[in-house]
Length: 141
Figure 1 (cartoon, helix red, strand yellow):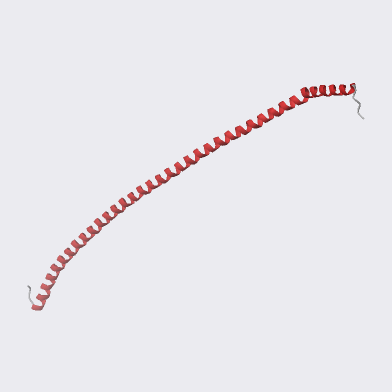
Figure 2 (tube, helix red, strand yellow; figure 1 turned 120 degrees about the vertical axis):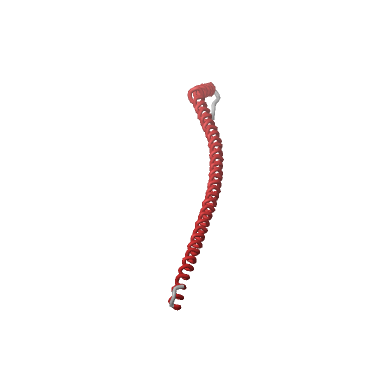
């Protein structure tokens, strides 16, 4: 059985002193370290969230600039294509005009040569007709 005497009081005082000493030596430094660690972790999480927000903002900016660059590239491509089609039309029109002029010049030259040939043939046929008639009639005509 337990006896209640002065040793119980001595053990209680000893326990309180031990708690006070352990509180000063172990518990307070340990709680301070745990608090600092918690603050460090919370700060790291906060910085990570801030970095994530900044990264998301930069990615959105990048996506917007990329989209704008693509649109600008498509517009420039369309303008270049439009200019190329206009140049092509102009070059084809000029080529057709030149080809038409050359064909007309050839037609005119052929017509002139045909007229010259007809004239030469008429003159030659008259000379030949006169020679043939002269031989047939036996005299010069």
